[in-house]
Length: 512
Image (cartoon, one colour):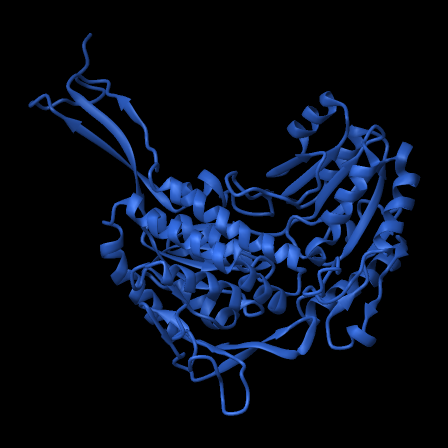
């Protein structure tokens, strides 16, 4: 692996072995122009500094964009199958490094090893899929309405693409953005979340080791608007992709619109799981636990609302709560742990504040609701798995995205009532239904207002070859994953070849 990513081969300072990571600009690992750095700490044990990263400024962003713009002139002319071969080689390398990168991710983000292995695997899957797209990038050929004339449409790259990624899937989501972009012939500048930069650095390092030409991918670490705003506002940037909160998405979308940049926004969710009377309750409970408490509830697709038909409501609640109380919370490096910490103190405070909100609203707290801060938990941001029952759909805990291990269980009369409850929300990302009735399943697939619907599975578990994204306040209509990503990172050019050797005027020169 490349060691120049660090200020030294493996050390920082004279007395520690904490690594200092540099920015990657124009094919070189470089320190920031500001001379400032920040610490990346383990949320399960904040005494551990996972790494020290550059606290970059506008000058660093400008340098990265300039490098990407220079690289675009050559990269766009590399045949797409050749571009894709670099991505395929990176996939092979990620397989070899999977365990190392998974452990790095657990240390910096907190989620359990089973999940971080899945996160790295998603990047591998995305790489293989996008490598295949390099030999496709299909466009239509169509008959012309005039004789001796050929018509077709081809995909072309956009130029320099800016990417702002979240902390909850710090390798998978960057792979969703970087890999289709470079296969389509674009060049990139990516800003990773300040809470989890290492996993994105590991992905970029792998692409560099796989032979990505200098300037094609650049990574600049730092904080919020200090580097986000220069990225968004730079005239050389032709596309912006953000995964984040709805509030930040509004700012990014407005800023991008001013200069007509392509803009993809993947934002919040408040995802419903419907359980009907005829459901396999064992399966529904397993799904609800995984969907609600996987990644400590820190997924935009988390199963934060469970809507249960009244015929099985009491049994479901009793069994679900019992299982939630038995989940083991702790350091994700322990293979026996079911749920890790919140990402940071601010998120933990938000989670706990919603417990107070739910109780004040009159919801019944039957499980959890407290911070864990004694013994093995004293140095981390841990919280109990939390369940509210008898929740009114209009309560804030049933309407607002919490992004933590807090699940609201809501009673419903029937499928129609459940769908009405599910849809009465500002978001529309993911949804699910547990039933054995195929007719009801197809009605739900039609009527649930969401970008994703699962049948007999929780609201999490998307696969890389299908479009990912939602409706309403969840985004602006673009999709990540599969052909949706190819659509965003390319634009159509229509081409007409007239070999009649005479002027032909479409819509005018036609036989009567």
